[in-house]
Length: 89
Image 1 (cartoon, rainbow, N blue to C red):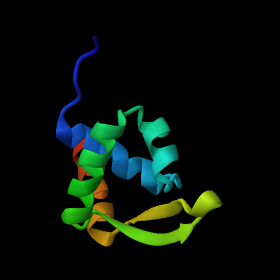
Image 2 (image 1 turned 120 degrees about the vertical axis):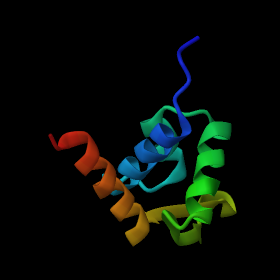
Image 3 (image 1 turned 135 degrees about the vertical axis):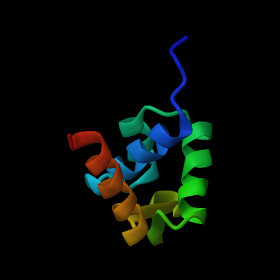
């Protein structure tokens, strides 16, 4: 069993995934290599803290909801803050 990632690292990875253009939950799960349970736990946190926002929700095939998410200004600022701390000397 691999080492568990810290919640902060998982949230940053999730925000980076959305920033890169992957905004569909199924694709986000694959891109972040999270379990469904872990993914939705962290998504709920990001939505509650206004780091991500639901941009659209529409009926797809077989009336299944297709949702897309976007990065909020607060989420963008968090990523910029982390990048400054990690990548600056």
